[in-house]
Image 1 (cartoon, chains in turn green, orange):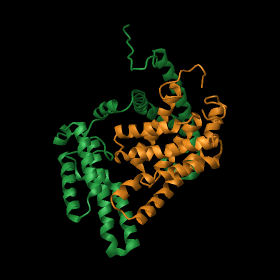
Image 2 (image 1 turned 180 degrees about the vertical axis):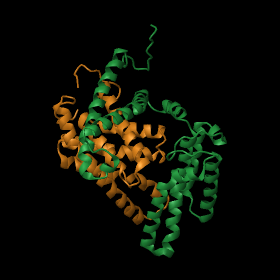
Image 3 (image 1 turned 90 degrees about the horizontal axis):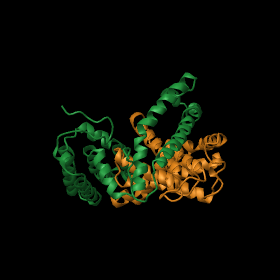
Length: 223
Length: 189
C-alpha cells in the first residue's frame, strides 16, 4: 500500500517513471503543462488537459489523498471564484466561466506539485547551484542548515518560558491577549539567539578564511 | 555592527548581517511549515512573515535587507517543497519585501513607531495578493472578479500582516537597549 506525505508537496520516495526523469526534464514538463493550463479555453481542451495532468500526477504513483493535500487550498479558492462569478453574472451565466477559471488555476499548480513530490532536495539544490550566484546559494544553504538548530532552540525556549508561566500553549495563543507572551517570551529570546549565532558563525567562517577570495574556497583541515 | 567587519559581494552587508538575514528567512520558513500543519485560516501566514520582514529591516537598517530575506525565503521554500506556486513564489515574497525596503528608504526610522510598522506591514502584506492576479488575468478571468477576489485576499493579508508588524518596535527597542543591534535606525546606508 502507498503511504501519503504528511503535508502538501512533500517529497515521497516511490519507484515510478516520473521519479526517474531528471529534474531539468520535470521542470520543462511542468512549464509546458502550466502554460497549456493558462491557454485552455474550450471544454474539450480543458478536459484533455485534466486527463493529461492527472495521468502525469498518478504516473508518479501519488495517491488521490496526496492530490487532495496538494490542491485543497486551490479548491477553497475555486469555491470563492465561482461564487463571485455567480454573484456577478447570475448562476446560469457565471457558473461555467467560474468553474473553467478555477480548474485552469488548479491545473496550473499540479505539475509544480509533481516536481516537488518526485524530486529530492539534493537534486533541486544541485540545479540551484548552477542557476544562482554562489553568495546567494551560501546564504540559502546556511538558512536551511539552521532549520533543525532553531527548531530545537525554539522548543527549549518554549519549554523554559512555559515553566516560568508564559502562556504559549497553542490553545492559549488562540487568544490575542496572550500574543504579548509570544513576542516577548518566545520571539525576543529567539532573536537574541539568532544574533549571537550569526556573530559566532561569521567569526568562525572568517577565521577559516571565508571571503578572502572571490571564487568559492574550501577549508582544508589537514593543511 | 563592528566597523572592522568585512563586507561581501552582497554589497554593503557584513557576513554577520547576511547570516542574520538568512536566519530571519529560516524563521519565516519555520513559521510557514508550522502553520501549514495546524491552522487553515486564510492569510494567517502573513502574521509571522511580516513580523520577520519588518524586524529584519529594524535589525539591519540597510537598503535591500528585507529584499535579501525575501529572496532567501523564496529559494528556501522551493528547496523545501513549499513552492507550490512555482515562479510565483518569488513574486509572493519579493513584492512585500521590496515594499518594506521602500518604506525604509522613504521613512528610515519607521521601525520605531507602532503605527508606521502596522501601516507598512499591512500595506506590504496586501501587495502579496497581487501575486495571483497575473495568472488569473492570463487564465481569462473577468477583471471585476479579479479585483474583487484580490480585495478580499488583500484585506485578510493586510489584517494579519499589520498585526504581526505591531510587535516589532518593542522588540527592536529591547534589542537596542541590550546592545545587540545598532542604536537607532535613523540612517539609510
